[in-house]
Image (cartoon, rainbow, N blue to C red):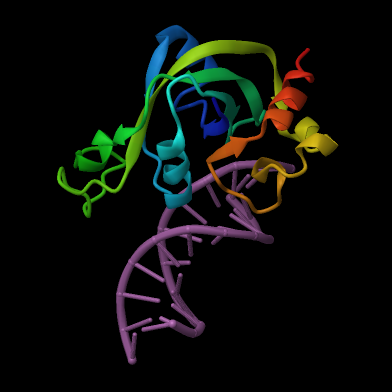
Length: 150
DNA sequence: GCCAACGTTGGC
DNA sequence: GCCAACGTTGGC
């Protein structure tokens, strides 16, 4: 079992939204590095649900990967904002994954706070200029974040 | 809304 | 294959 962190704009999907839905499809990833991480995920893996581009950026809860990634249908939908004219049913460059809600943190662990943690210094999340939206988390980093929960 | 940093595109 | 121009991300 592996650990991950995935960024979502709460306007698109928030941890509360996932809690309400129970399960959701995580799609629209259009960055090759992030996509490769999606493809490396397996059912049962857990991830930190991060809220980005919002008033309080930070880790808002935990989700779980339902099963391995599959071709992202939004890449083939002309009406989708994630439409990719270069992709086809035969050759879809992008992947999506189904996720389930595990836990909503009582308070968001703010980015500002996470940046102060020495144990998290190696995470792309806290590194200047990093825009990676899906990233691996080590067992040590996972435990360090869990320890910060209120 | 600004802007730094990064990724992608496309001419050559 | 280089690299300038452009587009996007995402914190502030």
